[in-house]
Image (cartoon, rainbow, N blue to C red):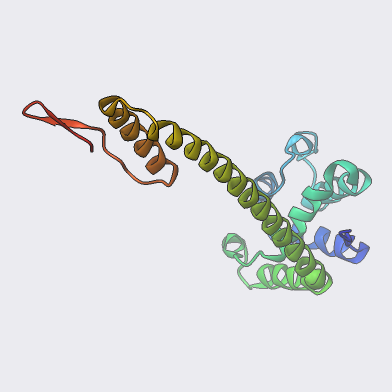
Length: 199
């Protein structure tokens, strides 16, 4: 059974701080959150007229209070901010470099609480992908096996056909479909001076 690791309270507090300082303009912060989470409904219900800190506090409080709805989005935010490394948006308002320094420190602080968590989460995601791929490959193999059984039955029927011309047309169609099954590019029959050639 898969063990689900919880986001620590320290990580939530660190996320609040980091989200409040990685963007200077509220519009940029709003766009970042909108692009990061899968459930955008919460964004339209947030009061964006208040300060960034109040916005982030409201957003994260509501998400942590309803983890049954927002747990995956909260995780998306944690991972996105942990991976955040482009602070160029602050440059215009950051004459002494203090805003950029503060943002970098906030992201670094968040990373200190999420390093193990992110690693476990990524490993769990990779395991899910591998499992889904294995299931898909198994289904594909079973499907291929069933189709090959059908091809074998069809070939046996063609083999006992005593009408040579009809058998030739049947074999042509049979080979065409068999090649398609293995992603080959068969060509149809064509005629040269009245003589039909199996493509």
